[in-house]
Image 1 (spheres, rainbow, N blue to C red):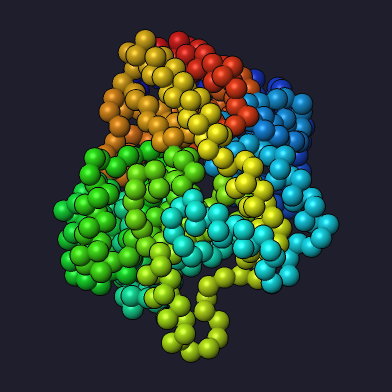
Image 2: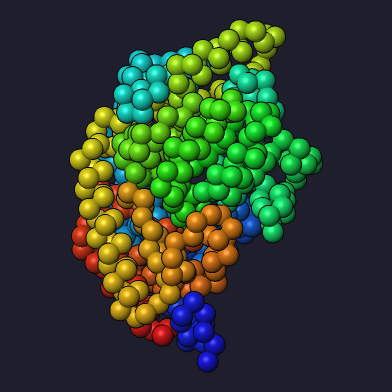
Length: 452
């Protein structure tokens, strides 16, 4: 018998084959659309990573509302992926859908602000504690623009990131630590210059390494998630961020917090919940209720430095912003989402469900003696193939097992349950029910019993 992460790997592979056959048999229209798509779509999908799921062919969605969606073959699912936080508050929340429809009839984009921009900026300042804001279409762009402002304000070139970080597809961050040495990520396509010229990388939770990287006093900013999320969840150790913030201030380095995933922690993100004080802050996918948009905020001091840098620059294109940035449709969606959907009551409900889910998963793991653990950040929960949560990106990377993940994810999908395809992240939303959580825990237990 071959064992892997405490399970019978031979049984798991046999189960996987059965689950693939079950998936194919129940989804003839998705299979047909996948075949048609291969004629004109690169890799047979609108965006290449849509082909990275655990399924034998792409699953096509017919409709999505709240915590549920239906595929083109009529199969229905409880969605615990929720667009990888893009629909963190459910699909098409009614206030957002109504606001988008009304705004679309009045105008979609004009390269000029609507009155919603004033309301949204005030609300962002209230929630996050940063007084000045700008907008983007995606968190990737918001991070890219924030980095430009940081470099312009400090007149420094170097970016510092944590190993295993996730900040969208901004090129500068794709530097990893391999055996303690910085290495440009091999999977980055079309990159023509050495990112290591201007990007440094250290391990999360390593204050000594952080100080060593900062003490040369040439680092413009530390771009960081409050907790690592995309390589598998890695939480900050007690006191880490207090000390890290002090080091940034000591060496004149700006701190940019990317809350695109950790906004699951609360209305003001991990930053406000835990009293952090970044110079800039980015929030992406969830803020518009599913409509593409992102925001980034400035402290008062950083806002003044940014404006001064712009005033002193030669007139012309700054490289910051796009023609669709802050379009009227996105602003209307953000206003509706912030006012009526992304509320304290919604968060409290989600926290209770996520805690119930985490405890349920831990119960299954303990009952079957698996060497796995469960990590949680607010409404975001994840099970990991290790007895104790990882402390940095290298540890998190070492326990990733895409083959194992694909078997679990496909098993759950065939039982009407979707979780995020990358590692084992699970989200709940205001429309998720306790019965949905119980169904997921029960299916997880069923999977484990099949493979031990």
